[in-house]
Length: 395
Image (cartoon, rainbow, N blue to C red; front, top):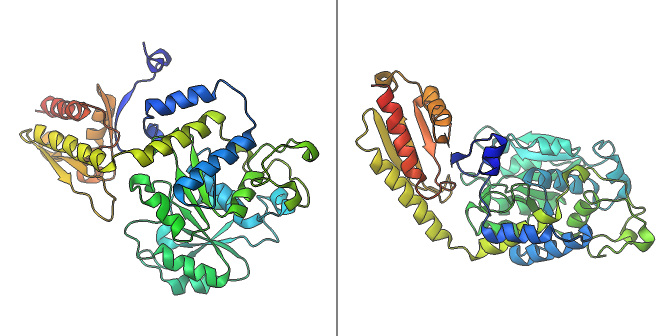
């Protein structure tokens, strides 16, 4: 009996991709083994964070890096670092940012469900541009003495190039933070955003990297990474006898040691830190082209299996610049012929055996979207069989 069965929780087929609500992704055995080893001994967390940060910085080309409990935590901590720098009094004041530079500029078409992280840190979002367009002039017009940072999302279809945003920010003495939580679908992004000159770049460790779900990391400027560490680590210390690496945490750089910071509740465990570093090393060794080819083959098999199924159309959606390098599949039902709406269809998939969770964005058109990244061996056939069962039950 599996641990999930013992708890009364049903395992599912993840046909939606690297979504947190379905557990992100599955860790390789090497990552699980590394986490198990890490769980067997005590370490000083500040020393572990420093060592992990050095390893990640070497892999990504950044000055420094830091492991967090997820990309959202990375973003909160990054904005906090932009607001405070190495000012202990400001660290103690957050999330109250009165008297600080606290405005964070965002293009309107970059607004998303996760940018509440800016406000959680004490920042104030300044929205610029239109629903489908934003220019450098729009950003420049919003910069003033209260501007702390520009938050940029490297969406593939964006006409706002990160390099241009960085150049503009440099001219005005403003920091640039990149929310790249889900952009490890393209391996080059792990170095490209840092190389572009962004001050801080936030990534998720539990998606395409296949690290622990409760992990993320920030790459960027050394002083900002230090500000993140001061606001994240356990500050119940005696500075005179603290053994923390001075490259990461130097009490002499602050007027005083701040109290437990705004990021204290986002702590990353030793197991997650070691697991993330291990997964990241493996990520750089993986054959990403072969992975995507295997994903394509699974979707082809799925579409072929459903080709003769009445009132069902299955089609491949080829990779595009707007979506990244993964193919998708669309399964559309004839709602009128089956007397079944798209919402009824996905409910039948989720509540059946096996429980299948596909993408939901086209339900109003009677279709579900299949992302192949989370599909295990043979699950494309299980999806086809379940769709056919649902159809037979309506005929």
